Image 1 (cartoon, rainbow, N blue to C red):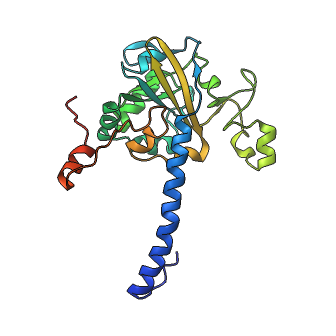
Image 2 (image 1 turned 30 degrees about the vertical axis):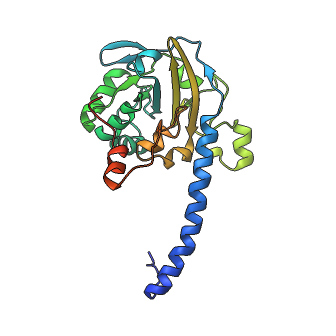
Image 3 (image 1 turned 60 degrees about the horizontal axis):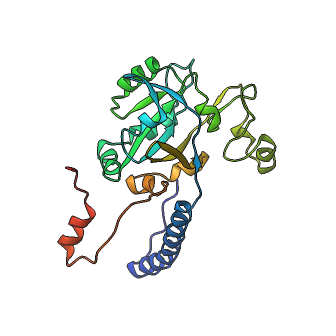
Length: 248
């Protein structure tokens, strides 16, 4: 691997300022995209999906744990697999208790759903030392309806909003090739309004690589970061405003 060019401090500063212009453009574009994402229409979920958690049967409503929003990570973990997908595992390893707490303050629950039986999920969860909520969708249409399990004998093939023909034209057929059923990754967001549940957003393929801290996850949701900022009087006030009250 080659190293960056060695230059003077002035040359570095000039180059850094040029890059800063592009960074600010990217930040403004991302903010505009996040606003447009929150304005997406939503679809009511009218199917009674069945899940299994560590305490037994669960509905999609149960996955919210009483909060208003739900982010689901679709984990690649098939019923006949002994371990989960390494890439999905690496991502879940980074879901720290602090990140979950920040989401909870914003009335948002994060849960992992895989098609493996709950016994395998619980065993793998213990092996990894995870404490976040995980559910099995085995026997449910959930994975098929949200296009993260592909099986032509169950439902038409579609991944990342493209059919196999469209993937062939785009040069991305590798997503839909292989022995079926295919397990694929993604994230889906849901909003609860009393007893009604709505699907607001899903992202697949490399789109999920852009996620990181709690703000990145909240930016996928319909309610966003839910922050009403007041002009802080000083640096200490600004810091207090930025830190959620975890006691609430």
